[in-house]
Amino acid sequence: MSRLWDKGEPLDARILRYCAGEDHRLDERLVGYDVTASIAHARMLAACELLSPQDCDAIVTGLQALGEAHAAGTWQIGLEDEDCHTALETRLTARIGDAGGRVHLGRSRNDQVLTALRLYLLDTLEGLAAQAEEVAGALDRLAVRQGEVALPGYTHMQPAMPSSVALWAGGFATEFRDDAAALRRVRHRAGLNPLGSAAGYGVPGLPLDREMTAEALGFDAVHSPVTAVQLSRGKAESELLFQLTLTLNDLARLAADLLLYYTHEFGFVSLPESMTTGSSIMPQKRNPDVFELLRGAVATGLGALNEALGIVLKLSSGYHRDLQRLKAPLFRGIDLATDSLAIAAVALDGVVFHPEKIRLIEELHAAERANALVLAEGIPFREAYRRVGATLKRG
Ligand code: ARG
Image 1 (spheres, rainbow, N blue to C red):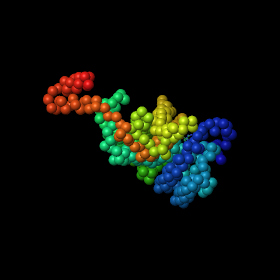
Image 2 (cartoon, helix red, strand yellow):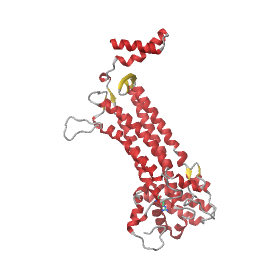
Image 3 (cartoon, protein in one colour):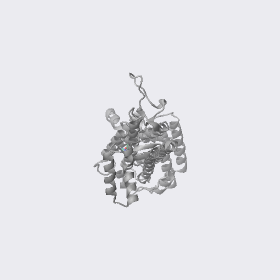
C-alpha cells in the first residue's frame, strides 16, 4: 500500500514507521468521523459543481460501506496506511476506481484530521458531561438514602463544624454538575469547521462552500480565516484535558474523604464485599482499591494536560507534524476520565454510612454557641467567641 503523497521515490521504512508512530492504532476511533466528514465534503464539492453527481454518489456509497465494514470489524488501519485518512482513500479508490481519487480535491489531511477530531470531541464532550452528571446523581441518591446522618465537618483535618451526609454529598454533586457544564463549554473551540482551510492556507482558485460543510456536520460556525485553524490545534484538546483534570480532582477529593472514612479507625463507611479487593497474604483484608485508583487517576490527567500543552508550546504558525502527537494524551485523558466517572457512580451506590460509629464531639458546636450569644445578647461576635473559648478551656 502506498502513501497518498508517494511520488515513486524509495522510502526508508524506518523513517515511515517512526513518522506513522501510533497513528494507525489511535486513528481507529476517528474512522467513522472521517467518513462522515468526507461525505459532507464530497456533497459540497458536487453542490459547487467540482464533482459530478455520479462520482459523488459513488464516493458517498463507497464511504458508507467502508464505514459500516470498519464498525463491524471487517478491516483496520494498518501501519502501512499511516493514518485513517490514507486508509479510507486507498480503500475507497480500490473499491470505486478513479472517482475515489476525486474526493481529496480542496482538502488536506491537515484540515481533515482536525475535522474528524472535532466531530469526535463534540460527541465525547456530551458523553463525559452526562457521566459527570451521573456521578452527581449517585451522590443525590446517597443523600436521599442517608442524608440526615450527622458528620463532623473538617478543616485542617480537625473537627470543625456540624455537617451531614446531605451537605457532604451535596457539595460534591454541585461540583460535578459544574464540571459537566464546563466540559460542554469546550464546544466553543471544538464547534468550528476546519474544512476548507486545507493545509492551512485555503484553496486558492476553488470556490468551496465552507458554510455548507459546517451545517452538514453540525458545527456552529466556519473557522476563519483559514490561518487560524492550524493555530488552534491543541487548544480544544488542552481545554478539555484541563476540565477533565479538574473533574478527576473532584473524584480524587471525594475518594480521599471516603478512604479516610473507610479506615478501621474511623469506620464511618463500609463498602459491599463485592467492591473491595483482598490481599494475597493477609486473609482479613478488604481493601478499598477502587477509591485509591480514583484518587490516583488525576495524576495521569494532569500528565496528559501537560503533554498536550507542551506539544504546541512555541510552535511557529501553520501545520507541523508535532501536532500528531496530541492524539495520544488526548485519548489517554478521555479514556481515563470515562472509566473513572463510570466506576465512581457504581462505587458510590455501594457506600453505606454507619451513624453509630461517627463520633460527634461537643466542640463542633462552639461557633454555633457563639452565634447564639450574639443573637441573644447583641454582643460583638469577638466577645462571644472569647466567652465560648473560655468555657471550652475550663471544660
Ligand atoms: N496524522 C497526521 C496528524 O495527526 C495527519 C496530518 C498529516 N499531514 C501531513 N502533512 N503530514 O497530524
